[in-house]
Image (cartoon, rainbow, N blue to C red; front, side):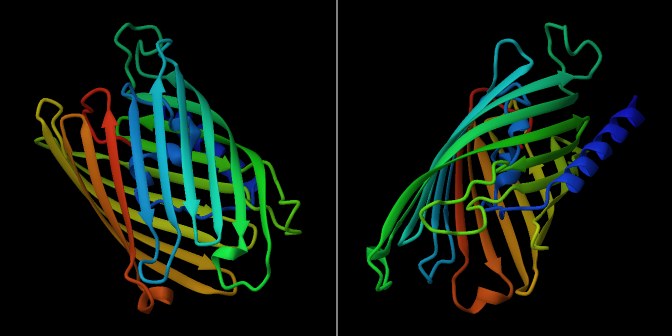
Length: 315
């Protein structure tokens, strides 16, 4: 049975890799604690409901964009259905991108008795999810030194699809976002404003005893312009659901390989803690080349509330 699951997972990864060739960059540094932002199948994948607020200030010192996201995901009373949604706002001095997403997910428990047992077991599970979303895109030249007097606003619909698999500490996901090749009619741009994106990730949590877990993971995404992004993550957490306090730390190495524009490298230390059902975390993204001498890094804060005390920090 385990070999069958692994074969299925590899087949899913290959299918995504062969059929989709465009991508958008990961804009969050703490999406490892909320994979729902890049994969709709994660909505309702565990028993807890999660409300998360993320705010990010990019490239401090050079007037970079700011991004805020509020997300919610839950498992319905039918137990195998997950629901989710989020709203976001991404703003620069002249350009603003705001939107929302709604998600439906279906989960197939694979542990013994998991589908029909009153005490639902989620040690092994395969999940599928689909999202519909819309973005409101606007531009105003009055906010910049652009001599042209112009502005526009346009609504862009889109859709996401994802799969997510967990098995006794191992987890993996594959998703495609922005599946509709929508182009802005008012600008004449030839490329989609939100190109389709492939996200692949996998990792494994190792129990060290005394409520301590060490979790390495790998994330990868790419596009048709031969731009690739790989991220290596090492996370340590200590958490006991019977206590009012837990904490985690993580170190991420992100490598962007862009055709014709060099290679951007970032180092991202992350730290967070839980008190009761509330979680607070901070990430600092420092660029090791490129813009390193022109900005003071990127700061991101996450505030979360779980409607049960989690046995481990959420993905």
